[in-house]
Length: 277
Image 1 (cartoon, rainbow, N blue to C red):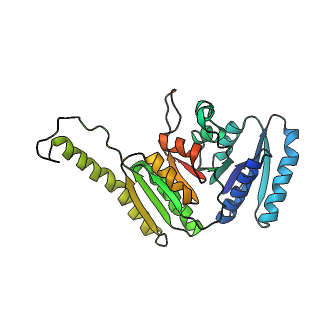
Image 2 (tube, rainbow, N blue to C red; image 1 turned 90 degrees about the horizontal axis):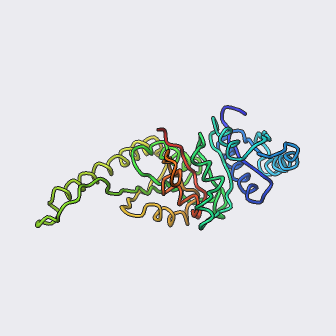
Image 3 (cartoon, one colour; image 1 turned 180 degrees about the vertical axis):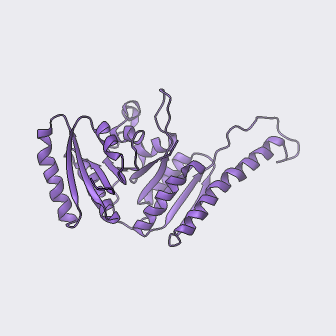
């Protein structure tokens, strides 16, 4: 594939057809090549599915360069490999929720924990090119790559950017209440921490806004329940962008709670951006 390209995983299902449509639109918007990948147990099965994918893409984007590839093996391992060097990797999701989804996960959840490039998981029923804003979930100073991607996505689409910054008070020493309101050492520590944590994303957003002056930015901070606040905000946004805060221990989900919740329940497509360790 070329230096700049979008990769999409297909399997012939209706869900993967929708992912294909999103991936083609994203590649066309960027002016890059589209790579269509089908991971199969037997490569003889891939021909008709890949041929159908090419026909569909060319009917909608006649000028878009498209290459196809079949790979023998599982979809997660295949797409993790293909994501290296890609501008974007795209998959669909069956929206598996409840106990089954939490226990066994999904291709999209496992991919989000391993991919080398931003991952777009197509959820909801929004059309790809409507005029809804881009939503950014920002958790701290390590999310600058995530913020940059969101600005670029809003710029490509020509839409506003909504930023939801989550702030939680952690590592504050517990103490007895002060007799004078809001003047105890712990309360002062909490206030200082809030000012410090809040200043980092504001500085990053100001710098990115200066680099992308045409983007209208709406920002707000939530102090509790960031995953649920973001989830509610996805109802009227084109796509939500979050960072992949990956976990290395064996137990529990491989991603942080915000990305995990959105991948299972978002009302719009989700972009998960890998965060450098």
